Length: 332
Image (cartoon, rainbow, N blue to C red; front, top):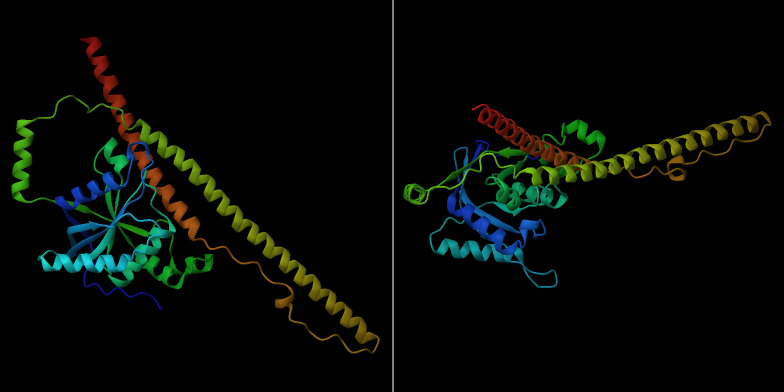
């Protein structure tokens, strides 16, 4: 059975309070460790809010505490207790999703897919916020909202990730996740305070032509090459499967042909033919590898290519602008 879409209007926009963004950033900085060198741990938390028409408003959040696998910790009980306490102090307590940090945009994996499917299956308007502290430290705020598409929900519910299942559902790496636009909302008092702070302490220095994105561009290229190697290995697994299937089918056909020739000879000698045997038990087909890993790898490679294109466009634009200014300065 396919998962039916029960929302009256699909979520078209995510509105996040500025305080929620600050809480997520603080949690990632405190619990994530040394993110400046890319060795920080992933952190997760719960998003709270409500749905208004086609807008998902995220008004609060709380983190998952860090604990080891040996500790006796119940995540579900912790979430229920936190939401119960928030309800007692008259704060929005409706569960609308979760957030997770990432390193260099590496977030597409089975764990995230499984978690988001469970969230959307129980709370259909759920989203996952992906925050990247490394990209934020190098450029602008990097926080994105994602949801599983209807094709991905149907395929994951039946776990149909075979080539035939993917062809039937129309699922590909391009339409597995959908990105929801994000709008950060602040109160009028906060906006007024920001304007006053900007007047009292205007930004100094001119970093408009800074090429600080060079390290990010290099790291994305390295990761892209690693993922290309991983995708090549997954492709080789499927090629080996097809080769083994061909060998089994050929051996099966040879056995059937040999048995037919033998029965023909026995009939000519007036002997009874040999009984038919179940060839499916004699020649077992190899297990077909699922294409889920290939989909996730291809989707992650698409994200890397998008980031490389963005960083390269910025870097080339800055280089051309700086070159033009230099030439103009020399002429004058």
